[in-house]
Image 1: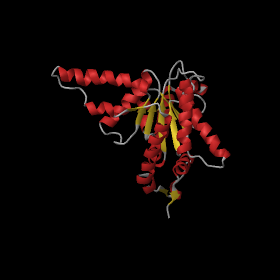
Image 2: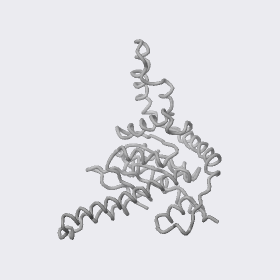
Image 3: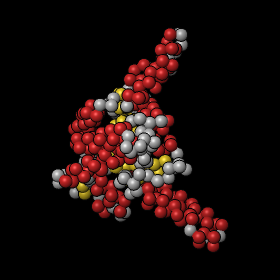
Image 4: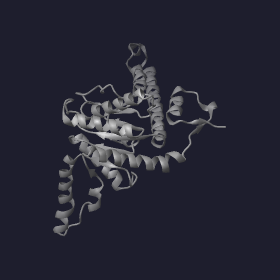
Length: 289
């Protein structure tokens, strides 16, 4: 289910007929609307939990400012395409232009190439948008699109759907996403083998953090504000073959040790909503005997 389905419900609050409602009825309608939205948001979260076990996806973060004819755009597009051609890997981006669009385009190119060879592709394009006054619409390439009012919920939406990440060239937003993943891995809220890969442009930022938070304080006899090993949890590379190999090996370990050991079953008599049917199909669940 896409976010557009939720948005359809939100329009209830904007119908012209609301003027004819009494204040009491109007407030009741709004309360029911909020409850309806909450139910569907909970369903989305439930699907994300299924997806975390059933599908392998990588987040590709990067700037929305990168031009389509730039070498940076072409690199990410080719990287995304190579990842999907190597394994059945889905892509999660911010759903906007620039690097995000490049990653989504790369997946579509890989899907087209597989289709020409008669191969089925299970990889999907997911866009996790943020409400901004200067960037209201997505890039139009994502199969599933959600939009968040706050960066905090958006960050968690990324984490709930991915098993790896590559941080390309970007600005404050990309730095935020990368450091958030770093913090989660630091405190073991992510698996110890969760790959966080980043373009070498970010290496300078980590050198500054290493100097300010660890080495300078150690030299002055103050308590370091970070463990030195934590700043080595991100791997810096722009070697496309190395990135694909790293993610492919992680995918193989996940498929062998986790995905192959999980079977999803359901009771057909309890399936009353089309949304649940979408979940069943997306995770390959089988009816319970």
